[in-house]
Length: 147
Image (cartoon, rainbow, N blue to C red; front, side, top):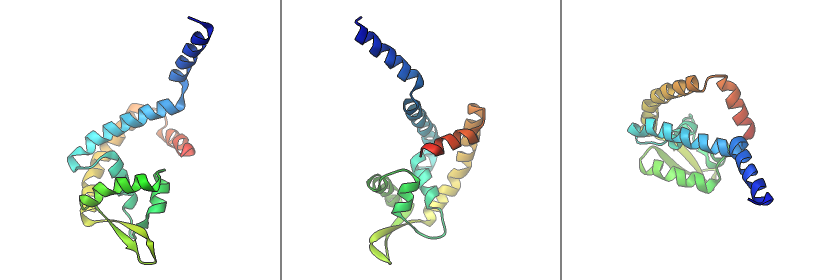
């Protein structure tokens, strides 16, 4: 092995063991699979559960603040909203104050699904926090500092 090949091999091992981005991506995929499995009986994914929660408010909300909170661009948000709209869990309406904007509304059916799914999320989340050990609030704070 040449010196350049050896240096690259060492860098690869270092990145594998230390790269926060890589570890966060792996953890995010594992978490999504875990919560997708738990939420499957309710016909939603973990991402859809998060979206329904963001929309669970008294007043309709514009797409911009939802996209910002979820760290998504608007086109990704739009793509994620379409299946929820088809299922009748949300409605997307023209903003009467700005006809170019859309307001997002959690429907009665969306609230029903959310209400049914929350206990499963709570149970799964409590189990996850127990498995992680340590201080989950510190982990949340660290993740929030990035987003």
